[in-house]
Image 1: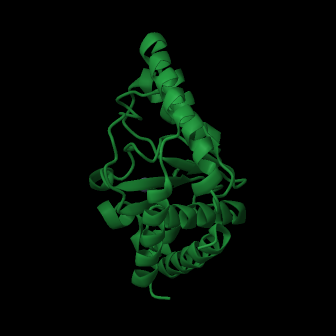
Image 2: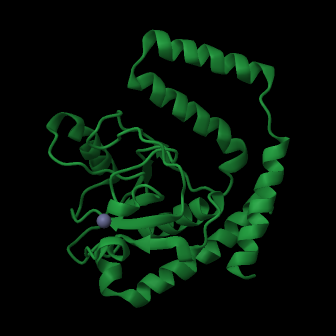
Length: 236
Ligand SMILES: [Zn+2]
């Protein structure tokens, strides 16, 4: 099926689903209690817990077809999680850490440490590790500091790698294809909306896919196939 047709189909289905949704009385009460908790106690920890709760609850429906991932949100701070709403999602930008051997946890913790060190401004929505582990650092409803002029309308995925070539391990690659395919499905994107950081600024990132454009095309084909797999899992 052509991308455009599939896009329309997915959007129609989502709209239909949206109409069926509504807030039940317990959900409203739950929301009120959470709001009171936030107002009275405050603090990022509670906001993080609410986001995690929201994501876990959403998993029953819209997390079908997603790879497993941990939600370890950064604290809101102006150096890595500014808390600015991401009002539209028009693409997904792929990066590499340029820090051989570091893990997804190392990178997530580094982003969070910037709130104290003020060393630079950088972050990413997701980090995929060498073992294929995935950590979400920023909600998809907020911007990350990863992709320069495209921070305002894209999601970002950082990938770990073992050496200077920047080539991803098989485990990283598999998780990246699954995560990207699912995010495309979820936000009505096609593989053509998946870009390299290089495509935004000319930066050599992700290095292996800048130096091997044929492998980048192969990656996008695998993402397109994965979108179809997710559609089947979701039952579209
Ligand atoms: Zn990058």
